[in-house]
Image (cartoon, rainbow, N blue to C red; front, side):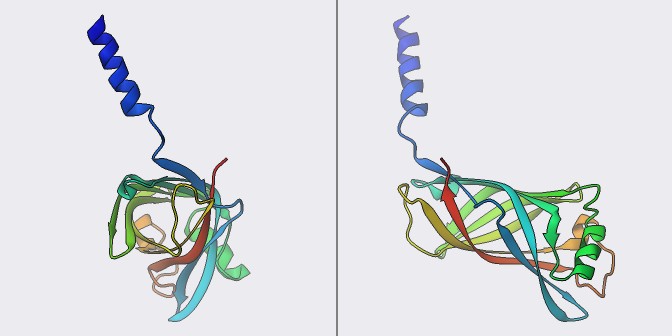
Length: 182
């Protein structure tokens, strides 16, 4: 019985101690900017965020976890004709949501390299997201400011309509704010 009590005490100390991570989220109705090109001309659009969770581990940042859900039906490609085409290409009427979920986080050169899976059209592919924190932060921070950058090829997800007129590369690039969850 004493041995069982000792194991229970060790379990409590290991898993019920003070929190070393805090949960954050993007503000409601956040838009994340993406870039693409048509016939070599640059254009921008916005993916609408509907849900997000950022479990930031302050003692060991590589153990942080990120999740973002986008509503493709509420997203835009910069102008009406392109938005209509984007929804068709991404099959947004059948698959209205896209998600990004982190699998590993590495820290080097003052940047976080987040390897995760982006799911579009019900197809998941690995994508590397580079996160640069723009100000000092700690577990007391109510907000965290950062920039993001990722690049992927839309045709990997079966979104190949209008190629090569609309180039394959999609670049996500933005400055965002995380708010501490309540």
